[in-house]
Length: 206
Image (cartoon, rainbow, N blue to C red; front, side, top):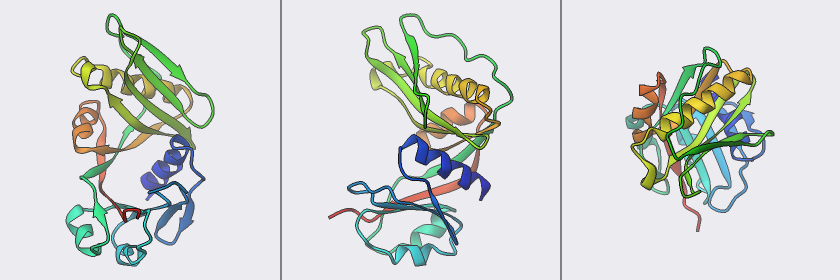
């Protein structure tokens, strides 16, 4: 539950949403956006049926539990996304981020809420990026992406290392994220480990 708490408290900073409200089974985030009105983040399956009974369009569930246990508890109104994983890594010190490939440059922006690392390509276009927040000694990494034209050049690894170094300098001792299947391979190669499977599901907005 502690990793879930760390993730949701940092995620709201990265997404500029209200602070999470702690409930009996996890957390509620009142996102308040079209298609994403409210999000429930829960650990385990004991309350999935209860939450799945709330079928208001724009309701999201993020369940930290095995996918094969969660999906049978969801009703037909719910649309489940691809497998995801809650992952973490210890940050053992500031260290070095590594070199920037020739022709690229790095920009780090943002001081309040979250910081964003952007790798800019030779033509001045964003080639890779990621954002992170630090809260209560934990960094949450979010929205890491490498543009298709710039892949296979180590830019994703560079962004992750830059964020880890910056987060450690800001007092984070651990980093947490929720990964896709594709991202998991990169993160595991950088020393991250899976804490839990995650099922993301939502009731589509009308």
